[in-house]
Amino acid sequence: MSGSVVRVLRSVCRQQIKRSLNTGKCNCFQLRQHYYPQEQPHHHHGGNRNSNQGFGRATKICFGIFAGGVATCAAIAYALDRSVVQASHNLAHPPNLPWEFDGVLSTLNHGAIRRGWTVYKMVCSTCHSLKYVAFKDFVDVCFSEQEARDIAAEYEVEDGPDESGEMFMRECKLQDKIPGPYANEEAARAANNGALPPDLSYITNARENGKNYVFHLLTAYTDPPAGIELRDGQGFNPYFENGALGMAEMLQDGLVDYDDGTPAYKSQMAKDVVEFLTWTANQDWDTRKIVFFKGIGICVIMFAGFCTMYRARKTHHKYTKLHFLSKNKNQKCP
Ligand code: HEC
Image (cartoon, rainbow, N blue to C red; front, top):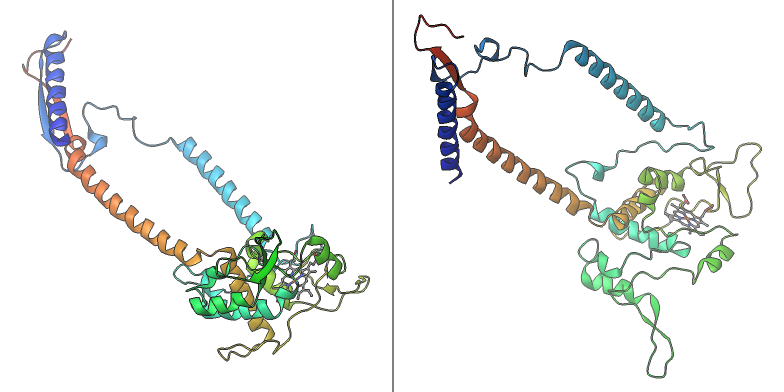
């Protein structure tokens, strides 16, 4: 239908041009139409030579200088951001580790998520909550439904009121969120020399360069340098602001037993718990990548369709030239 509209418009245009030529002062020209497979704009007879020939030289130079300046500034900012020590803070910048799941085509390792849960359960859950994760989230990610039910049954949660108006404790069910170790913030601070262990559900997203930061926070404890006094329960960690971290070193080789037989080295446990915490913070990690590729696929198909349509509809207009030639060779245009 739109094809016929284009045809009608085209013929209307042609007629109008003819009419204006005939009714104007000058009726000494006739309209000829040529189809040129390859447009040569430089040799267009009737056209304005300077129009549509791109930007001027000065504009191009200005644009080049501007783009160069922006690129240089961005490169310097990036290099400063990546530099290991930041002069403005008293902390080391965690170097980037080659996380397998960061690849465009790679997913999280679900075995590692399962091991990471073991580390969280055996070590971190003594102090840190995971209050935005429900037991049902584990199903088909790192546990079967029955396994997730069994894990939930190990926890208790307050429910109620019952018929007599009393609150009561019951075993957790699949839909419950994972209960934290402390009843409130004050209890958490009281048990940790005044420091508050943050909820870990979104920690890898909440901290800059989260995965590398948490990994190094767990593995890079050292003796404090001269002049830094640590209080009770504190450890020195160069990746934490000012170094004095209210969490002592937690991971030691062989601290947990993995059910898949992986040797539980300190770095292995840190890596697994970081992968687990990356999943808790981004439960749609794998889905996002699949949807991204589906989106790209749809865009490619639509773009190809658009190009085909463009060629079919516009080629005629693009390569058609209108020449106005004198009807009478002796007659000159006024
Ligand atoms: C004995 C209690 C305890 C255990 C066990 C523990 N932490 Fe901590 N954690 C703390 C406390 C307290 C803080 C707060 C430190 C501060 O603010 O100085 C903290 C802070 C943190 C932070 C945040 C630092 C920041 O940037 O605010 C992360 C991440 C963390 N812990 C991860 C873990 C992981 C992972 C585990 C398990 C392998 C773990 N912790 C085990 C007590 C603990």
